[in-house]
Image 1 (cartoon, one colour):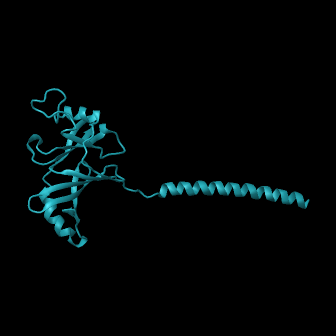
Image 2 (tube, helix red, strand yellow; image 1 turned 90 degrees about the vertical axis):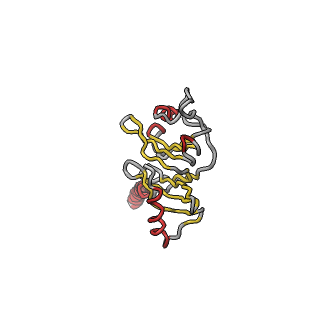
Image 3 (cartoon, rainbow, N blue to C red; image 1 turned 90 degrees about the horizontal axis):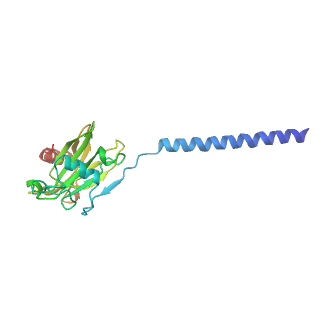
Length: 202
Protein backbone atom coordinates (compact mmCIF):
# COMPACT_ATOMS: atom_id res chain seq x y z
CA UNK A 1 0.00 0.00 0.00
CA UNK A 2 2.82 2.37 0.92
CA UNK A 3 4.68 1.44 -2.25
CA UNK A 4 1.55 2.15 -4.34
CA UNK A 5 1.12 5.57 -2.69
CA UNK A 6 4.78 6.38 -3.28
CA UNK A 7 4.55 5.37 -6.94
CA UNK A 8 1.38 7.47 -7.44
CA UNK A 9 3.00 10.40 -5.64
CA UNK A 10 6.16 10.12 -7.77
CA UNK A 11 4.11 9.95 -10.98
CA UNK A 12 2.16 13.06 -10.04
CA UNK A 13 5.40 14.75 -9.06
CA UNK A 14 7.03 13.99 -12.42
CA UNK A 15 3.96 15.16 -14.36
CA UNK A 16 3.66 18.30 -12.29
CA UNK A 17 7.35 19.11 -12.67
CA UNK A 18 7.30 18.44 -16.37
CA UNK A 19 4.17 20.55 -16.81
CA UNK A 20 5.45 23.48 -14.79
CA UNK A 21 8.84 23.28 -16.48
CA UNK A 22 7.33 23.40 -19.96
CA UNK A 23 4.93 26.16 -19.05
CA UNK A 24 7.68 28.07 -17.29
CA UNK A 25 9.99 27.80 -20.27
CA UNK A 26 7.22 28.78 -22.67
CA UNK A 27 6.18 31.66 -20.46
CA UNK A 28 9.76 32.84 -20.12
CA UNK A 29 10.31 32.64 -23.88
CA UNK A 30 7.10 34.54 -24.60
CA UNK A 31 7.95 37.20 -22.07
CA UNK A 32 11.46 37.42 -23.44
CA UNK A 33 10.16 37.93 -26.97
CA UNK A 34 7.59 40.51 -25.85
CA UNK A 35 10.02 42.42 -23.64
CA UNK A 36 12.92 42.27 -26.07
CA UNK A 37 14.05 45.90 -26.53
CA UNK A 38 14.36 47.39 -30.00
CA UNK A 39 17.96 47.67 -31.15
CA UNK A 40 18.66 50.19 -33.88
CA UNK A 41 20.89 49.07 -36.75
CA UNK A 42 23.29 51.69 -38.07
CA UNK A 43 24.41 51.71 -41.71
CA UNK A 44 27.50 53.79 -42.42
CA UNK A 45 27.35 55.09 -45.98
CA UNK A 46 30.55 54.52 -47.92
CA UNK A 47 31.68 56.11 -51.18
CA UNK A 48 30.70 53.29 -53.52
CA UNK A 49 28.00 53.55 -56.20
CA UNK A 50 26.57 50.01 -56.62
CA UNK A 51 24.29 49.02 -59.52
CA UNK A 52 20.83 50.57 -59.28
CA UNK A 53 17.82 48.48 -58.31
CA UNK A 54 15.57 47.81 -61.31
CA UNK A 55 12.42 48.97 -59.53
CA UNK A 56 14.18 52.23 -58.60
CA UNK A 57 15.19 52.78 -62.21
CA UNK A 58 11.57 52.26 -63.31
CA UNK A 59 10.26 54.79 -60.77
CA UNK A 60 13.02 57.34 -61.39
CA UNK A 61 12.35 57.23 -65.12
CA UNK A 62 8.61 57.72 -64.58
CA UNK A 63 9.39 60.75 -62.42
CA UNK A 64 11.74 62.08 -65.14
CA UNK A 65 14.78 62.03 -62.87
CA UNK A 66 16.72 60.01 -65.41
CA UNK A 67 16.23 58.09 -68.64
CA UNK A 68 17.09 54.74 -70.19
CA UNK A 69 16.53 56.03 -73.74
CA UNK A 70 16.97 59.70 -74.73
CA UNK A 71 19.83 61.33 -72.78
CA UNK A 72 19.64 64.69 -74.54
CA UNK A 73 17.64 66.22 -71.66
CA UNK A 74 17.95 63.79 -68.76
CA UNK A 75 20.89 61.97 -67.20
CA UNK A 76 21.15 58.22 -67.86
CA UNK A 77 19.67 55.97 -65.17
CA UNK A 78 23.13 54.83 -64.17
CA UNK A 79 25.11 54.39 -60.96
CA UNK A 80 27.59 56.79 -62.51
CA UNK A 81 25.17 59.57 -61.52
CA UNK A 82 22.85 58.09 -58.89
CA UNK A 83 22.76 55.77 -55.93
CA UNK A 84 19.71 54.61 -53.99
CA UNK A 85 19.04 53.76 -50.34
CA UNK A 86 16.31 51.72 -48.67
CA UNK A 87 15.14 53.89 -45.74
CA UNK A 88 12.21 51.55 -44.99
CA UNK A 89 13.90 48.16 -44.50
CA UNK A 90 10.65 46.41 -43.54
CA UNK A 91 9.19 47.16 -46.99
CA UNK A 92 10.35 46.60 -50.54
CA UNK A 93 11.76 49.21 -52.93
CA UNK A 94 8.35 49.84 -54.45
CA UNK A 95 7.21 51.52 -51.20
CA UNK A 96 9.74 54.31 -51.65
CA UNK A 97 13.47 54.96 -51.47
CA UNK A 98 16.15 57.64 -51.30
CA UNK A 99 18.07 58.89 -54.32
CA UNK A 100 21.41 60.65 -54.02
CA UNK A 101 22.79 62.46 -57.08
CA UNK A 102 26.38 63.35 -57.84
CA UNK A 103 27.46 67.02 -57.70
CA UNK A 104 26.93 68.95 -60.93
CA UNK A 105 23.79 67.09 -61.95
CA UNK A 106 20.89 69.32 -63.01
CA UNK A 107 22.72 72.50 -62.09
CA UNK A 108 23.41 71.69 -58.42
CA UNK A 109 27.08 72.18 -57.48
CA UNK A 110 26.75 69.71 -54.57
CA UNK A 111 25.12 66.34 -53.90
CA UNK A 112 21.34 66.25 -53.95
CA UNK A 113 19.14 63.91 -51.91
CA UNK A 114 15.56 63.14 -52.95
CA UNK A 115 13.19 61.05 -50.81
CA UNK A 116 10.59 59.32 -52.98
CA UNK A 117 7.40 57.96 -51.39
CA UNK A 118 4.64 55.78 -52.81
CA UNK A 119 1.07 56.76 -51.96
CA UNK A 120 -1.98 54.98 -53.38
CA UNK A 121 0.00 53.67 -56.32
CA UNK A 122 1.58 57.01 -57.21
CA UNK A 123 5.04 58.34 -56.44
CA UNK A 124 5.89 61.77 -55.10
CA UNK A 125 8.91 63.61 -53.71
CA UNK A 126 8.57 63.91 -49.93
CA UNK A 127 11.86 65.81 -49.40
CA UNK A 128 14.76 67.23 -51.36
CA UNK A 129 18.03 68.35 -49.77
CA UNK A 130 21.35 69.70 -51.00
CA UNK A 131 23.45 67.29 -48.97
CA UNK A 132 24.88 63.77 -48.92
CA UNK A 133 24.14 60.62 -46.94
CA UNK A 134 26.34 59.78 -43.93
CA UNK A 135 24.32 57.25 -41.92
CA UNK A 136 20.95 55.49 -41.71
CA UNK A 137 19.60 54.24 -38.36
CA UNK A 138 16.61 51.91 -38.18
CA UNK A 139 13.74 52.86 -35.85
CA UNK A 140 10.67 51.12 -34.42
CA UNK A 141 8.56 53.36 -36.65
CA UNK A 142 9.89 51.56 -39.75
CA UNK A 143 11.50 54.65 -41.27
CA UNK A 144 15.23 55.04 -40.72
CA UNK A 145 16.62 58.20 -39.19
CA UNK A 146 19.01 59.88 -41.63
CA UNK A 147 22.30 61.60 -40.88
CA UNK A 148 22.88 63.99 -43.78
CA UNK A 149 25.98 66.09 -44.35
CA UNK A 150 25.80 69.70 -45.54
CA UNK A 151 28.68 71.92 -46.60
CA UNK A 152 28.68 75.40 -45.07
CA UNK A 153 31.12 77.81 -46.79
CA UNK A 154 32.02 79.50 -43.51
CA UNK A 155 31.87 76.66 -40.99
CA UNK A 156 32.57 73.46 -42.93
CA UNK A 157 30.76 70.11 -42.72
CA UNK A 158 27.52 70.07 -40.72
CA UNK A 159 25.99 66.64 -39.95
CA UNK A 160 22.27 66.83 -39.16
CA UNK A 161 19.93 64.04 -38.06
CA UNK A 162 16.55 63.85 -39.84
CA UNK A 163 13.50 62.01 -38.48
CA UNK A 164 10.35 60.90 -40.29
CA UNK A 165 7.45 63.10 -39.19
CA UNK A 166 4.18 61.78 -40.59
CA UNK A 167 4.62 62.36 -44.32
CA UNK A 168 8.16 63.71 -44.69
CA UNK A 169 11.52 64.07 -42.96
CA UNK A 170 12.32 66.97 -40.65
CA UNK A 171 15.67 68.22 -39.38
CA UNK A 172 15.86 67.58 -35.64
CA UNK A 173 19.44 67.74 -34.37
CA UNK A 174 22.92 68.93 -35.34
CA UNK A 175 25.14 66.03 -34.28
CA UNK A 176 28.55 66.95 -35.68
CA UNK A 177 30.49 69.94 -36.97
CA UNK A 178 33.62 69.11 -38.95
CA UNK A 179 33.54 65.53 -37.61
CA UNK A 180 33.41 66.69 -33.96
CA UNK A 181 30.35 65.85 -31.86
CA UNK A 182 28.39 68.85 -30.61
CA UNK A 183 28.58 69.04 -26.80
CA UNK A 184 25.23 68.60 -24.99
CA UNK A 185 25.46 72.03 -23.38
CA UNK A 186 25.85 73.61 -26.84
CA UNK A 187 22.98 71.72 -28.51
CA UNK A 188 20.23 74.32 -28.16
CA UNK A 189 22.25 77.24 -29.46
CA UNK A 190 23.81 75.22 -32.31
CA UNK A 191 20.42 73.82 -33.37
CA UNK A 192 18.86 77.28 -33.28
CA UNK A 193 21.55 78.56 -35.63
CA UNK A 194 21.88 75.73 -38.14
CA UNK A 195 18.50 73.94 -38.35
CA UNK A 196 16.66 76.95 -39.84
CA UNK A 197 19.55 77.57 -42.23
CA UNK A 198 19.35 74.06 -43.73
CA UNK A 199 15.58 73.55 -43.56
CA UNK A 200 15.09 74.96 -47.05
CA UNK A 201 14.93 71.43 -48.41
CA UNK A 202 11.25 70.66 -48.98
